Length: 207
Image (cartoon, rainbow, N blue to C red):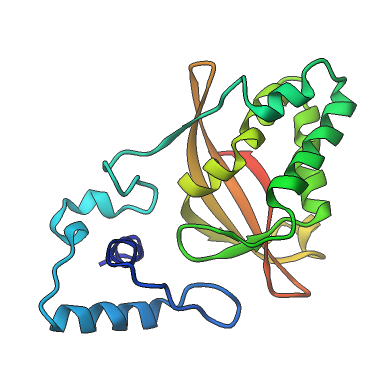
């Protein structure tokens, strides 16, 4: 039984995922709740389905990776229309502060993260890229959908130039489509070395 399955079971049964003091999911307690439920004769719909539906990067509903459509006519894309690249960065940063600032963002595995002003600035600056700027803007216009559809794929050590900020990285994969072209992205989440809390700080291409 994998972690993806147990989260699917919790969602199906309306069970609140227990959390550790750092805000991450307490997997051991969740499995204990599941085992208690099984003793009472419970059987999960997700458990009866094919094992492939339990992959963390799958959509719970139809066993297919969920593709997030990036809309050229989104509110953010309209806000930045006609702006210079520099002006667009500021507009995107303000949008991210409105949408994500001051609240916890919860990923599918129970990890909660925030977006600081510095993170919003980093995400927005990626839209300055001459080649990828428009696509990056379209991605951020649907940032909440990206977070909902993203699935955890790996944890890694921190790169040297980020060791002053983070102690570890977590990566969440999500499939997107822009102007008919599909691309897998990674949502990058870092654990702050000072506060021990998670921050959503970048979007990169999945490789």
